[in-house]
Length: 133
Image 1 (cartoon, rainbow, N blue to C red):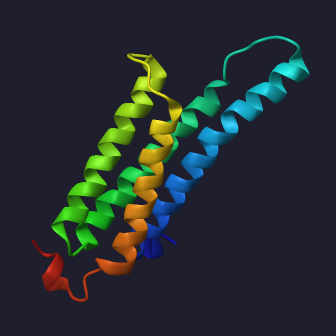
Image 2 (cartoon, helix red, strand yellow; image 1 turned 90 degrees about the horizontal axis):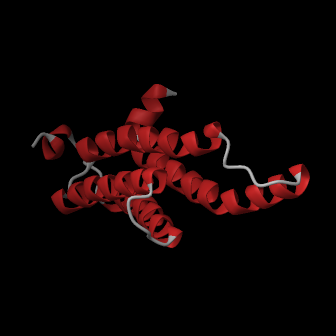
């Protein structure tokens, strides 16, 4: 399994990004259901908020490997930059530094998934020499 992840990190990265989006979209629904079931307002369980960071760690390693395997420097830069932006957005959600609509995080996560898919389709090295730089 690890070998397949190293060979196709863009699949892992795109999957992690899509799961992150689903996680973000499901959050309000779960809180509504939880509030109705318990009858009071409670904050999110720690494990639920921690999933953001699990997705970030998975996507970090997927991007690291994708950058090694990509043949286009602009895609390498875009993957890295989008991960940093997503990381900062997740930190902002955790610490509430300033208000941003949650759709900004969704758009960045979706863009990251699309970049992984584009990289998988159009930017893979055909031999070792193209990725050595």
